[in-house]
Length: 261
Image 1 (cartoon, rainbow, N blue to C red):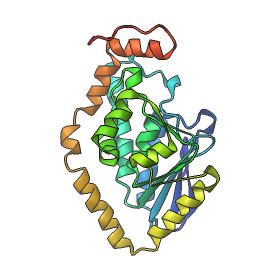
Image 2 (image 1 turned 30 degrees about the horizontal axis):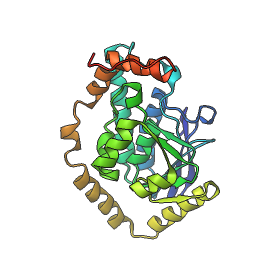
Image 3 (image 1 turned 120 degrees about the vertical axis):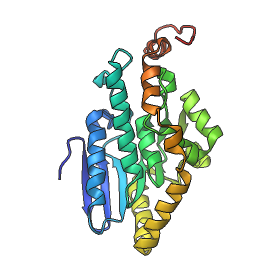
């Protein structure tokens, strides 16, 4: 099968899910999200597939939202909610993969790209990786049901730091935070991911699948109950006056006072 914005490579037990918009650093539009949902369903149906390595073609793993799509505060409320739901389905598809998932990331890992990585079971970063969750800086709430994933991964205090302040973090810092399992020089990134994948494949498949399913069930038991209104939160913040101010500030205009508006 073929997808417009990504590709599946490899054969046998180890497959590669590759974001394939390299000229724009694999920026995320609605088609990327739809393709991820479809590709994950395809991978789950492949007999013998035990590991999926998620990576990005070109100079970066993923630069976040494709701003050319124009889905900002002036979009219809229905469109904002629909897009947030689509992102939530893409994250759920990645997190729910039956095979073990490994994110092998390099370059920019921004916004939705960081959410993709968090949804995987393991993360390996190249030394040149820069991670930033920038939604707050744009006056938006982090959506796609991704806040629980950050909390589970780096803890509540670090998650607040990363999401509230929208700062850029080097790979070594993310390793210390527990975001990455391993950091390697960029030329060694794929080799490191394959090495981890081969460790998975060397184990009996049923206990591995059961372990993944059980740990995920324990960690995520309350996520849906707490975040059932997540798409509406994004729509609310996107349509706020403060979000418009934040976007103007991000574009270089003078900063304005913040209000609940």
